Length: 77
Image 1 (cartoon, rainbow, N blue to C red):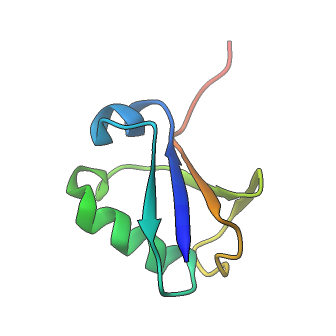
Image 2 (cartoon, one colour):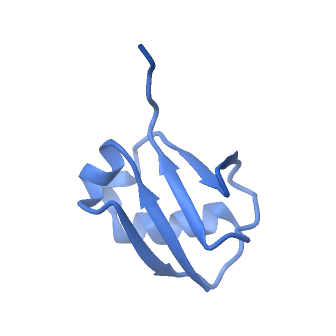
């Protein structure tokens, strides 16, 4: 399955892209992140949330959407 991964904020700066397509053959969010970390090792120690279908999910969630967003911590003002 082709997954579109969207990067926001500092994550986009670190990966030098706003989004990319990753071929993903596993099932869970943590398995997807392992692929992302291999491609972008600078993200290994970064704190961020994962959203599927505009909803925050945990690491054991099954990836059933074709678009995933990686969201860094942010503060409001």
